[in-house]
Image (cartoon, rainbow, N blue to C red; front, side):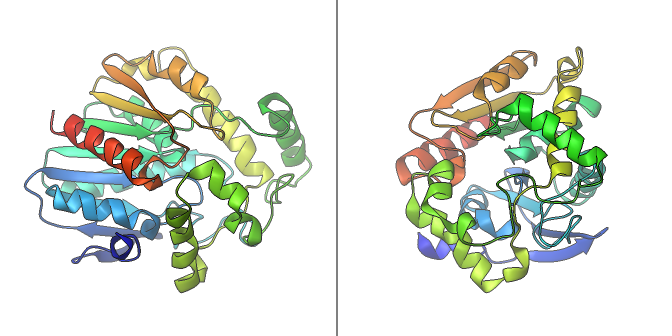
Length: 300
């Protein structure tokens, strides 16, 4: 329903914690769920799913990653920048500690794209804190069109070495018409109406908009992917893990995801037919199937 896509469930409490913009809803007979968005995301973008999870009986929390949404900027202008993903890993550890100190167990986590990447690294360092976890289109490999990952990695490293780390990478730029284009929409979802919700929210809150990635973000992303590839790292994860990947994925590498998920004991990987990158913002039949799969898994 459009009213659930363009409003937050009642009871939302916004706070600023250690420089991050956070939100939470208390009360949940089913336990507590932490949601982690992806690169460029902001809390309100997933409002519709918050309504669903609240209706399912979960206490709920989320936040804007440092450098995006309402959590400030780290680059030049509105470039999506970070020098190292370690910044976000430290923030995630802090947010998880706060979430688990203030929310009733059992504790669950659902993470999309870059959030899924960061969650896997967190779980490898702190296994067993969550009862169950779900990754949606996790960023475990970059397609990096049009140059491809090998060339893009090299270009990013050279640019950072030349002091251009905070500058926009090739074919990236400030937030504008490109981010609202039908071409970008097709990369993310086959539901044009849900894609337009992001623009609607940003019209109400322009300060949440983020532009394209910097050279530094790309270099940091490839460095973090190298860490994930370290033998023995993902093998430390022991909790039940569900990983859902879109059949029509064009941003992250589903092959890399399959290879990494195979390293996690007890992980289940499933492909969602007809879906694009943003599984929670797809057309109703796909989205409802994804939500049903998530709920069934979390309830065990």
